[in-house]
Amino acid sequence: MNAAQSSLPSIGVLGSGPVGQGIAELLSRAEYSVSLGTRQPNSAKLDRMPFQVERTTFEHAARADCVFLAVLHSASRNLVTSLRDELEGKLLVDTDNAWLPGHARAAGLNGSLTEGSWMAQLLPAVRVTRAFSHIDWDKLVPAATHQPETWAVGYAADDPHTAQELETLIRAMHYLPYLIGTLAESAAIDVGGVLWPGMYTPARMRAVLGGMA
Image (cartoon, rainbow, N blue to C red; front, side, top):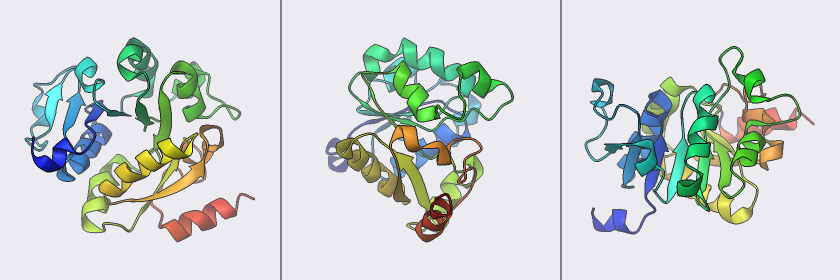
């Protein structure tokens, strides 16, 4: 670990699919110490990851200072509830989407319950936030690397301190943070929301959200 990494919070990413890999890559490039939690740490599909990213178990990744959740929605409930002790008190960034048929209904998600609120109910002792859920996985890394500081990430958080922490991580990934509101107000970045799925500049995101009024 270099001097820059030692002054930054460690990052755990739960999930080794394209979203999890993209988040791990961008934060590793920003000199964060990143652990990628997966059931198959030796999988060949992870060979493209920067060598600095540690491939490890979900349990180990969840011990990091800040944790990103990027697994299939059908697996998220069992995974996070099994890691409650490791996640307690930490910033958790939920990027998941119940986009596959039946996943939203199975989770109990509906027009009155956002993904962020659902996750916060599962983890009452964790500082749950929402971000990156409206960005397609195949654009996550290219947009940040080819057009840095151009695209907005809509995010939701329930208190100013947590929001500030998340903003720092979003900026480190070369995106521009845009506060949508609280978790209960974050339907815009859920499946079927007005911002999902899409890439927006801050001005365009403001205009789209303003049209909801």
